[in-house]
Length: 215
Length: 182
Image (cartoon, rainbow over all chains, first blue to last red; front, side, top):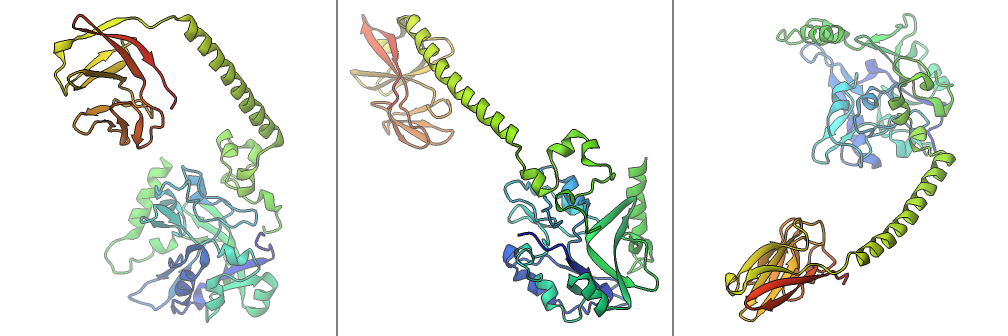
């Protein structure tokens, strides 16, 4: 049974309190028991306690699947990008390097890429994903669009991202302030800012990557 | 964005429809339903061609048997002097063609054995182990009984083809090849 089309995933990064409940709950998911697929990232650890949960955004044109040489990553009809198929995955790491959001995890011990599949065993049977059931602050929310609009009158969902020259639209939505909704979110913008520890200018790395791509 | 038809959910990176995309993208679609989809016509074609291949195979076996019968008896060929092979010794030779490696074995004073050297599993060369009384294939650890050529262990299921021998005036001749299925 596919995931109902009216049920959507909303991430409100600013509400994350870094409790790691989602990370723990994710390990309880039956499709990848014992392995958490959530990345809980610190934005700038030396200056702020702000954390950001990263789950799979389920892109409309999934870059991980585009770069897969073994044809192992598939999207089901409901738009959920599934974990790599075990018989096909060759553990080449292409998807891990290509994903604009850094979602896929390479499990070397299984020679398999594993990623968040929006708890497909649960969402396809009309239950909420593990992380969304436990998040105490509502940073991860799963439900109908009307529901979130009623709950968060100040925020509006968006699903357009800019990754270098690539525009990415996703099934999963992010929440932004309603009074100044962004046209898109620049995924690489954080890399252009002042480096966290004052050590490595990350924009140098990014610009050298993209100059190479343009020539 | 979410009101698109479920079966057409993937967007191509350049946004053009799937029919305008390169053939490889149509052959390796990202969407699960398209990846799993087998057209009725393709399935029928597969069934038809596979059945045809089986039928042709049967004819090929018949023709092969018929032509083998027409080839006549294998040649008689001197392969070694009697004193050339010591007791417990071996010698390689080619029979019936120059491309067919065979093994001549002398397990005891008065007995000579000869087998095709190609393992019946995947045609690796078998190695005689005289002290164990067996022939070993190093590729996948297949073992054959030395006295009969029958498989003892490992993947091979058919015995090694036996070369029939004849000793005349102190010379060993290969007289024929005995292919067995069991």
